[in-house]
Amino acid sequence: MEFRNITLSIIALSCLNNLCFAANFNTPLIHSHNDYRQKVPFYQSYSQDIDIIEIDVYLNKKNQVVVAHDIEELPTAPGIIDLYINPIVKLFRQNGGKARKDGYKPLTYLIDIKDDGDKTLKSLISILKKYPDVFNPDVNPNAVRVVISGNKPNQSDFNKYPDYIQFDGTTGTVYTDDQLERIAMISDSFKRYSSWNGKGIPVKEDKIKLDSLINAVHAIDKPIRFWAAPDGLTAWNTLFTIGADIIGTDKPEACCRFFSDYSKNSFVLRSKEVENKVQSYSRLDKTTSSFEGFKPSDAYLDSPVDIYTPTYLSDNSDNKIRNVILMIGDGMGLNHILAANTVNGGLTMLGLRSVGLMHTQAKDAFTTDSAGAGSTMATGESCNNRAISVDENNNNLISLTEKMLDYNKINGIVTLGNIADATPAAFYAHTNERDNSKEIISQIENAHISLLCGSGAEHFDNTDNNNLNQKYRFIYQIDSIAKGPKNIICIDEKMGKAANAFTINLLADATKNSIDYLDSKSEDGFFLMVEGAKIDYAGHANSLPATVMEMLSFDMAVAEAIKFADTDGHTLVIVTGDHETGGLIITDGSLSDGQVFAQFVTDDHTPSILPVLSYGPSSSTFNGVFKNSDIFNKIINLLK
Image (cartoon, rainbow, N blue to C red; front, side, top):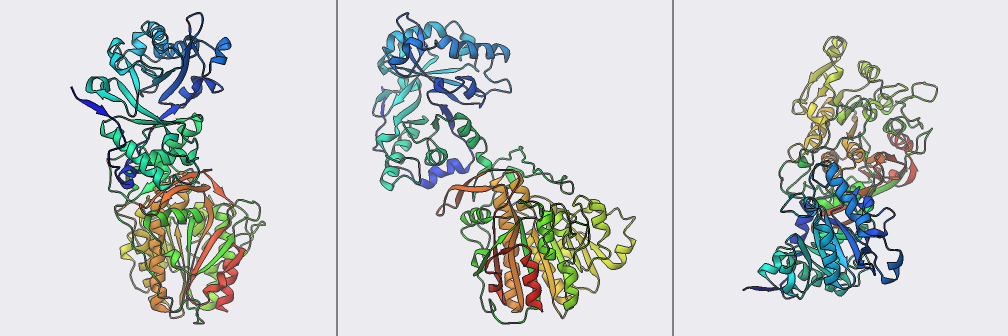
């Protein structure tokens, strides 16, 4: 007969191996600790699809199993039948023999016996055996699992109780193989291994002890649960990443919400996994409503994207500015940058030395939309939300692409989204409503742009394009952008899809090709606006993996602009956002492993101050704190 003893003698695996569990987007079992103390016992946790409900019990003087944590509560303690047996029995009958109406997800009752274990357990079994279809997996494979904790029998007596009764194991206890089959989990006090309070991280010595215990339990193929552990977002995430399989909490709603969105709130470089058919859809405007969404299976990279280190030879020099490249990460805030930087181990944009901060408010709202913000940057005048480069009286405002005529410069617009969406439209059109896509597209004919690149084939039906065909050459792949006398409209539908490992370089390629085209077309230089459109979409979808993918796609485009600026010596590059989307908060991460965890506080824009990173001649002009309208004014003042 073989005996197993869970001790701390097993060598701990590396932290990276434990983190792989989290990186694969599995989630732990959530355990509602002292569930009867919730405002609505049972139902509150059940409604959150909780995995394990803890029930503390005593046997009162009437030989009734009652629910209480302390003996002083016994006089008024409710019975387990009313509080936990009848509700689940009723639900099983309603749900056709299963705990959950919408499908099978195991439910466990962890019953913590607080008094005489044998008497109370026998009374409990006499109740459970009345409902074999609810509590006996041999009768119903969907049955509630019953695990006995607290004053449980000695392991040598496990076989005296029905097979459907399982037990909570303890560390340091020797179990035979037969006894181990009756063990549902291994539990221990967190405080035995660490005094960590859930803020920051455990100290190294504590981490080693925790790793050792967790690996010892996993070596016998059992899940581990810590009781008396810190209870909060940082604690839940830390416990999970170090390998705890069961997370106990007094906050079941918050804990379940955190882990239900775990795959959307964490990211690390990894190889592709089995396809997940679930998609996250953005809450977007009319123009981009056809966006097909982010597939979690596409949000992976098995290696970092390249980072370009500038030469700084022309940075903040007195060189005459010939070209201006304005790069707008739509929805990009500081934490979006931090998330991508952590995963990738660096970003090109963070190599830029001139750094400013920009207010983003619209004229009529504290929180701007892309139309108000894009129009304000494009015209130098504070604009209302939804307005496309017009004032509150619907008068056209002069935009950068129009102003560039004063300096004999040509213009290009590249977006990793729809060409009629608010941000690109703000640089070539004028209307009081961003959803007026037909009106926006009609203005391309008279716009002062030599290149327009993005998605949006639905806007061109080939019947009303005669005038456009005279002015522009239509192409349908960014690879086809080439030098030539005619202006270009490039409609590449790949630009409107979410970035994945195979298309993450799309915006960078479009940026490089557009720079080469514009540079060859004008001796007096050019203005180019490049938009990373779907950083915003990812924020609306509250998807961290999509956010990181779109951020890295945008940073690769930034690298192409900086490379050109280094070669040219007369190019000013400005990198910023139009607003922040999602209220992204980084809650934890690992620089060594390139892993990041985050939470979104909204599915909409926020009024956050944004970074402005600049490079090239007179780049320090964009240092300091200023309004978004100053983007236009600073550019024009430098060209005078």
